[in-house]
Amino acid sequence: MGIEERSTLVFASGIGRIKEEKQKPVRPQGDGVVRISLKRLGGGKMVSVVLGVPLDEDELKELARVLKQKCGVGGAVKDFSIEIQGDKRNILKAELEKRGYTVKLAGG
Image 1 (cartoon, one colour):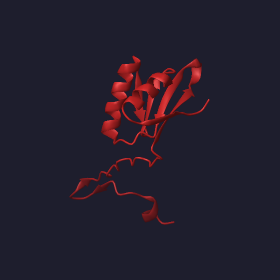
Image 2 (tube, one colour):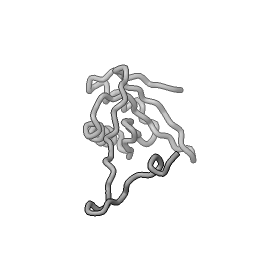
Image 3 (cartoon, rainbow, N blue to C red):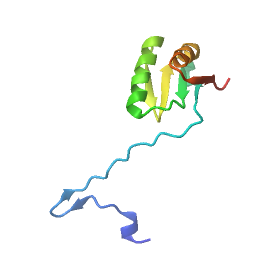
Image 4 (cartoon, helix red, strand yellow):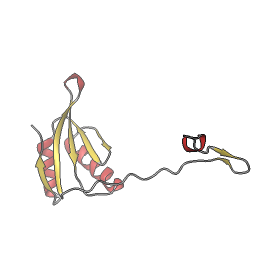
């Protein structure tokens, strides 16, 4: 394997520093069913994880904001999934069904 195959161009004379284009993450294709599961973290903490919502990244962040307000807790959007602090599966299920999604509680 030659040097050309292992290295990336980071600087070129006359052009300056070369920046790699960040690729926008691609939303995974689902089966049209939104799944809500419970993930246990260290220290006895739990997170409700919402997967399979067919929205773009910006719309998903807006939905996460609304869901966090409904539950009265914090959360985050990671890899096209919404994480809500605590076991809020029933509240999330009711709110998502009200918005027209088919929802299943996944896991134990």
